[in-house]
Image (cartoon, rainbow, N blue to C red; front, side, top):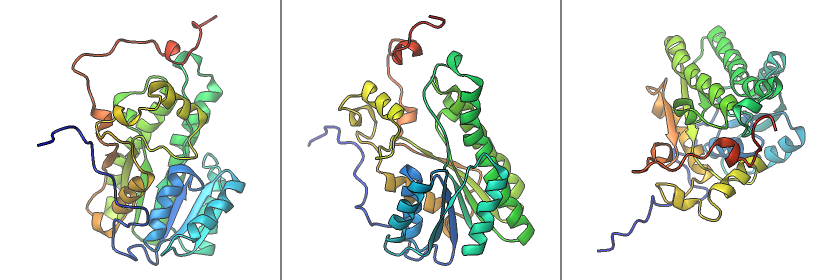
Length: 298
């Protein structure tokens, strides 16, 4: 018998759906950061299940290309795009107004918009801190608040999925700003699930592991290459990285009629990588050395 490690099996092929066709027919799904990367991948799986989509992003040029791509997904409903800076509550309200005018009040909100870059904590400027926390945490709150208030006023149910990060539990050396913000996002899931459950509003979290995609930032891509040049699969317990559609399938389940009793939960989709431990701890390398930075103050 061949007992050599093989890792987790590959997912079903592109175009497969995790739920019955038409699961989201007649529903409106709003995805922030939906013009690129994992946000677009998530939006595509909702589209495949019949959803009408609103994708929001700060970058107008990127949005139109993404809108056309998502509209071409087999099974997709109507797709519209809205330029939005989630840090600005007035612009957030404008996006919901536009969604209601073009389609209807979104039934599902996916808070995917975030900002991030690696940096030693001592080097973070006030502006750098605000840039990440205001987008990742405050922007998520502004979107969530607007969604919740409109559904509470209308007396209608809804579902929110917040995209998180595993360092909300573990801490994230090199990402103090993002880790603090994502911890806040996770806490919003747990707090609002209780507050808004009586009104039919679900709130869940979804944490991606390593899902390489064409829109990854140079900082993140460079970090992966430094950590595992040509061997990133071997550094995952699954012996492979994630495929973006796998994250989309998880999002469509959490917001679906089949998960109505799931709320206040954060689902980690990372092949168990965040739980990996070594029998012998690796040598500690200071973060500044890992990033190739000189000693502080030099």
